[in-house]
Image 1 (tube, helix red, strand yellow):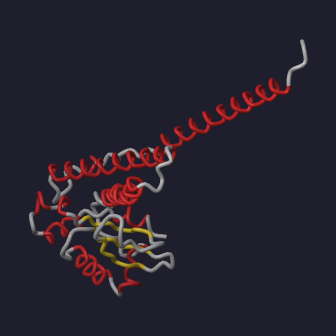
Image 2: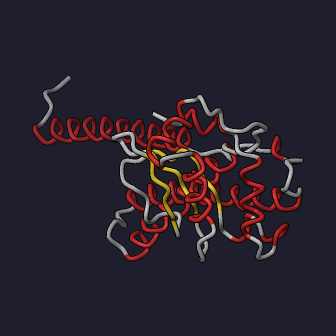
Image 3: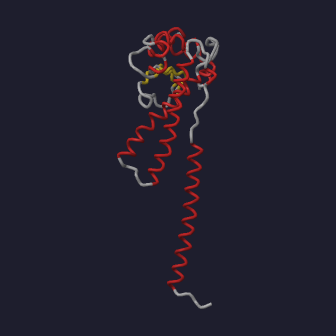
Length: 229
């Protein structure tokens, strides 16, 4: 075999390098796709709440459907934003608006999960448990905390009433108007009450206090206490 020319050598080297790059790129794309699929969120089944006192089947099934929409839209945004990055569309108005939208969809999904998961309880808060003791310590008494939490939930407007625990351990009752704004940074949600109209109007119309009363009869205090640090 004759000696290769310099041009042939460089061409072969370049082609080999390109093949390696393409292989690595394919691997990274495949890995990214795999990671995206692993990140996909699945709507949880809260059918066990059907039959809960004070909550009609129609209201709950409508609420479950709305929650499932947040899960679907969160997954769509995860995929769409990842694709826009690959296509070099970062910084476009469309990318910016979808990025802003992501917190709304994701928090809408997660807050509903917290809400449904702290429902379905049958008993009262264990007054000797760590949550009851912490509430009494930070609010003076359970009764004062309940008045404050119900007061937050009954405020005019749509949103969420959330019992938060700060990293320091202190508890706060907080009003969140939009899913993605007003949350206390670094705090853990302990108890979530949905006071958007879809959570109660089918059953209670404008009688929000009656809905809040039904919510309190069905709190799963063990689930709430398990969130406490």
